Structure formats: C-alpha cells, structure tokens
Image 1 (spheres, rainbow, N blue to C red):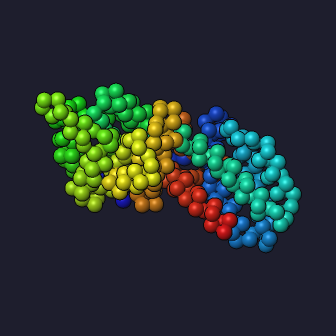
Image 2 (cartoon, rainbow, N blue to C red):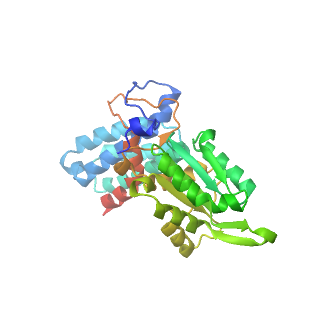
Image 3 (spheres, rainbow, N blue to C red):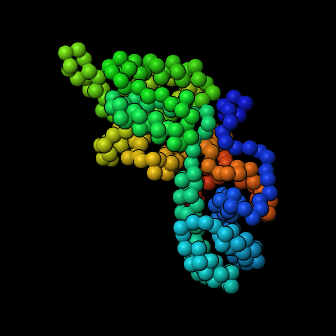
Length: 315
C-alpha cells in the first residue's frame, strides 16, 4: 500500500549479503535473534518440547551461538547457563517456565537495541509548532537526530500569524506531498500575541484535531501528530490521544529514538502499511549462515506484536 516507487527509499533493500565474522555482523545479531524467539515460542505452543525434543534442542543450540556473540548489556553468561540447562533435558516439566524467562530477558535486550538504532523513513517531513524559539530549535534538532534531513524540517510559531495560519498551511502541505509521511509535533499551550500585547491562548491539540478533520482518510493515515505538554495526567493524555495520536514524552537527544520508536510503530504498523522505519546499521543487507533472512518490515512488526505473543504463550 506504500510501494517504494511512490513513497521513496524506506531504508531497506531486497538484496542480501552473507554474514561474516565482522563488527557489522555482530551488530546485526539482534535482528537475527528476534525471529528465533518467536519460532521457538511457537514450538512450545505446539508442545513440540514433548513430542519432538530434538527440534527444541536444535533451536536452542542455534540461539545459544548467536547469544554468545551478542554485544549487549545483558548478562550473557547467565542466559547461556539457562539455555544449557534446557538443552540437557528439553522434556523437563520446568523447561517451559525457563523458556519464558529467557524470552523476556533476551527480547527486552533486543527491543532496547532496536529502539536505540531507530530512525524514521527517509521520506518523512517534520513540521513543528511552538511559540518558543528555543523549543522550535530543539524540535528541529530532534527531527534531524531521528533521521529527517534538514531540508525536510520546518518549524512555525514565530508570532501570531504563523500560529493562526498553521492549520491551513499543514492541510495544503499534506495535500501536495502525497509521497511523504508527515510528522507533526505541536505544543499544547500556544500564546498568540494580539495587538496591545494581549495574549490569546491556543490549544495545540485542538489545532491538530482541526487539521485531521480536514484531511481525507488517505491523507490522514500518512500523518502522525504528537502533542508536547508538561501536563501528563491520564485525563490529559486521553484528551491528547483523542485529538492527536498521543503525547510525546519528555525527550532529550539521548533518549529521542527510544521515546519515539514505540509511538511510531503503533501509528504505522508494518502489517497495515507494508513499510517500516529504518534502523541505523552499517550493513543493512544481510543473510545468516542458516539462510534466515529478516526484512525490516517483519522485524518492526515483531516489536509491535512481541508482548501480545508472549502473553498468549503464557496463557
């Protein structure tokens, strides 16, 4: 539904290159391990550990080899120790519980790794609205930090005219940029200065709500609009989520990618869009020695589905 011919380069490529013992390949290991976790979980759902323990043993062996080479902050040896215990007796009544422990530990590390490497698709345009010059500058830097080119970052809010004209501008902009994703960040509390220095308070979430109402369904589905506000009570967040697509939490350049990754993938699930964000890898095209090829679309979808899959396995 979002073919690259119409929507540009999304950071992926269908060609593959064989992995070798290089730093690049070690960085790719989290992306190879993720689908292994899902595959092994499916075997447990089918009670394969009882009917065919050899299949579980083989899967665990392959997982162990990749975990040993994984560069991460998690305690590798404690995880390998649990894998060894499971391999000694795949039929053990405790093996399922041990697997879910491993699943949670390894998967948590993989998700953290992927969030740190997150970047938005290259055909994303960032548009900000904030009445603070300092905040406008920060949001532009934030856009650039998550992978939006500088010439695709726009910030408004310098005076009443820019604030009051923002709705019309964005609607027309989206209508004329049909090959792009539009990422809006709007401050909730906007001060539009009238004549005689009187202030008029404008709600950013209302601005976003009005913009979304004026867009066609196809135009709106290419938009992600997030509100910035210091008010983050459950009722406030509910309001923002009704008018926009959520609240952008307090961000720094250090946590920017982690903060945005889940929000972006929730808004643009690859299962609906057939596209995904990119990930900052030195080598984006790869193939494992076991012919396990994982597309960025598949991998992004795993992040979205991972918690529900784990819960369903436990249930």
